Length: 152
Figure 1 (cartoon, rainbow, N blue to C red):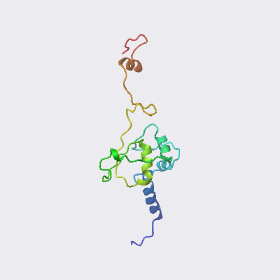
Figure 2: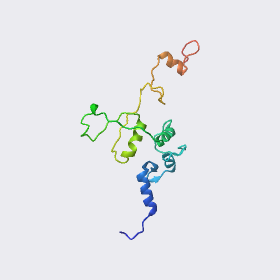
Figure 3: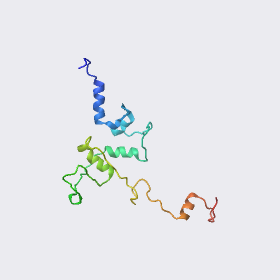
Figure 4: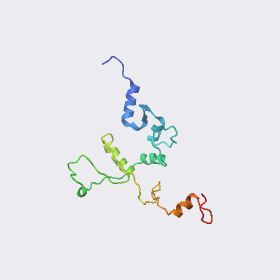
């Protein structure tokens, strides 16, 4: 004991950090992140040193919604299922993370997420097919006139 009274503010901040670590930046509350974490519909304008992408605000909203999904083990495809400390999970990334969140919050050492690319799925927000003929490319970039001759 150091003879000092309990610092209630510090205690509350420590509890908040434990519950909502993503609402803190450099040890201080980031109010916009806190609002986004709590499901507020905000425009994140003061972000620094972060990864941004189209649809990030939508992802926060989806993250806040509940799920009824469950994980089903596939023991016949597993190697050493009963003895391993590692789990391979296949599914939609955000949905799987939501399922894991309640039971495993603060208990998982690392998650490796393989991004969905070249899915051929039209519902995917980013284009993943980049093949085109030379003529399509030249037409798209506008380097041909209406008669088909190169302009540059």
